[in-house]
Amino acid sequence: MGNQVEENLKIVKQQMERACQTSGRKIEDVKLLLATKTVPIEKLQMAIQAGETLFGENKAQELRDKFPLMQQYNQVEWHFIGHLQTNKVKDVVKYVTLIHSVDRLKLGQALHHQLVKENKTMDILLQINTSYEESKFGASPETALELVEQLSQFETLNVKGLMTIGKLNATNDETRHCFRLLKSIQTQIREKKFPLVEMNILSMGMSGDFKVAIEEGATIIRVGTSVFGQRYLPDSYYWNETAPQDD
Ligand SMILES: *Cc1c(COP(=O)(O)O)cnc(C)c1O
Image 1 (tube, helix red, strand yellow):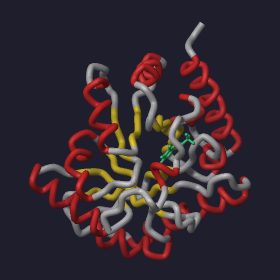
Image 2 (image 1 turned 180 degrees about the vertical axis):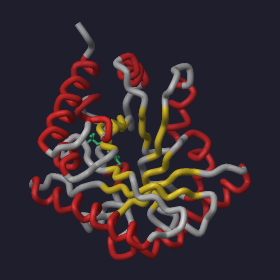
Image 3 (image 1 turned 30 degrees about the vertical axis):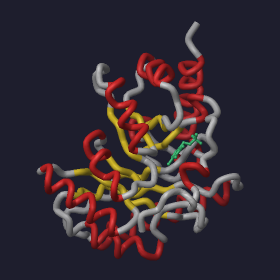
Image 4 (image 1 turned 45 degrees about the vertical axis):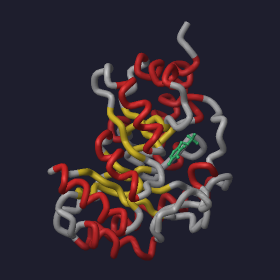
């Protein structure tokens, strides 16, 4: 008998495979990132034992707490998926290989400044607010092209693609619209052929909508609840516009 995390992972994997089949995609082309906000380390260890290696955190503090406890495992990789304040940049670049949530020039500048100091580069995604909901972070679709061009000027930042949070508690058609919009922005950016900008990653889809996201071209899905169970903090704690803002 496996544990609950392992059982849940099996189900999610089956659903991923089915979504790949129905959309003619290869399962190797879709990565599963486990969103671990508020999730205790024991459950992360269960996921590792089940063969998972990719984890994402929303807050610098939680990342800093969990990172050392996970270092003993080979191949564990961390991404940052939450709203990033410029004064937390230093903590985050230390631990992660990809930041999904770059959504403004000021954050790009802060990252660049820190990375220059450390003589490092960082892979980033541009977060786009495809649902136009005020309570969510992300650049507006209309400013995406301009922002990519500005970010591409920083030689420490490698723009690898785009991320979005689909409209929540919405119909499949509404979320599908968000994901299609992200895909179309990817196409527009590719056509511009900005030097050093790659657009191969589409980070989209969560527990409620990852099947639709896979059908629409997601290359990374970010799943928490379906694997780890319900969280004790509401997502508004992480996403709301009343969250601490620095600009
Ligand atoms: C929490 C979170 C997820 C995972 O959400 P679930 O609905 O629990 O799967 C994905 N992406 C981001 C940015 C998150 O904050």
